[in-house]
Image 1: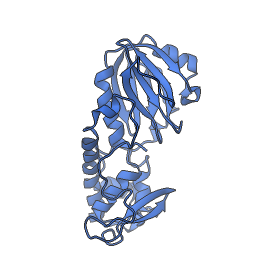
Image 2: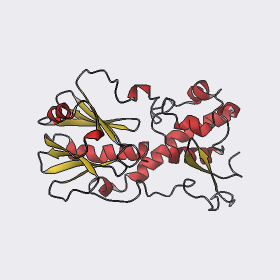
Image 3: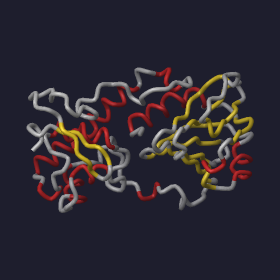
Length: 273
């Protein structure tokens, strides 16, 4: 599942290709992808408008139009938006196509079909996307030791579940939570209420560093966002995630896997207390 670094990479790659371009028409192959408003209103509100910017909130991306309206979408498990020439063949799992006035398309593909779109009219209250429930951005300087202690310091939930809670921090997912906790030396199953001041300090410092490195690594593959490619979202080598049975890069002990919140979690039983 794409997490904040992958989502932000997509925005950074697509924005220069789309700003100033007008949406000529919209092709919808899977109507259920659009949650709000109805399909006719969604298409008519897009067509003829120019794209002025692309934004992001947590794992949501916006396409901001000169009408003041905004298209918001969430990639969920396997969604991807990319830019390609309109004469390129349309792949099997393409659900929405925005045809632009320069002969290119913005195409949204999603094999699992969990991704969703919303169009918010200028000034419309957002009661549809769930963004109002999101916590602060992890790279904006708000995730401090004091914030984390005050927000989840007395929680009986395991620390990884707290990091995955989008109402606590917007954008951290399964992969980067494992990487953060490994570098912090904290086992993902440890109860948040047992963490000490130094632990929270370490986590708050590592969050922007780990996500920032993920973003830096991801931006090295711009072709991913400008063509219909298959493969893993981020091919950078994760230290911990997906390495069950491999030796820990620090101590050599075998990396183990457990399940937290119905997701696989990887940790070193020696380095992570």
